[in-house]
Image (cartoon, helix red, strand yellow):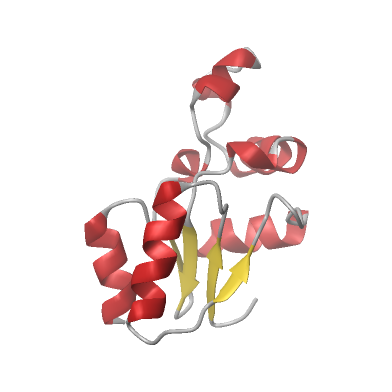
Length: 118
């Protein structure tokens, strides 16, 4: 895993906003389009190991999640989250930024500011 990555979906406005802010600060992360190039189990576990957010926040509980008939209570542990995201990568919360040995979900402006300030 490189020092600075953003796990990115180009159809996601939060991803585009975060990437634009990062690039406007002159930073150059490795952009990982995880839907085009699905993450491996090893990569997912590596992200989870350094994730500063609760592990269950890594799973999007949106209408796709509901359409699959999934129960949020079943996705609070590493193994279940990894298994789900390997099967349904579209359910990964985004964007996820890995920087300085820490992974965080960067959906808010506050989180974007943390990333661009270093």
